[in-house]
Length: 84
Image (cartoon, rainbow, N blue to C red):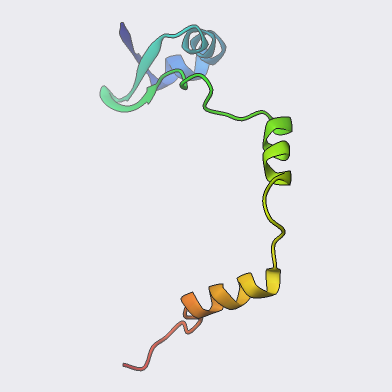
């Protein structure tokens, strides 16, 4: 069940509220009675551990930075103002 809390309660009880979120609860945060945000648990497995990310990165092909820069320069117009 979603519980509505106000900004003051979030500030004063942030530790307890975050523990409840970690346990699966969802909160709607209201400012002057108007709902403005939702606090809910993140889906499991959303983040990759550092070691796994590094192992994956090591399998990527070597990067040619000069080629990358040339491709990016061809895609991006560096002119701030255009004379059209």
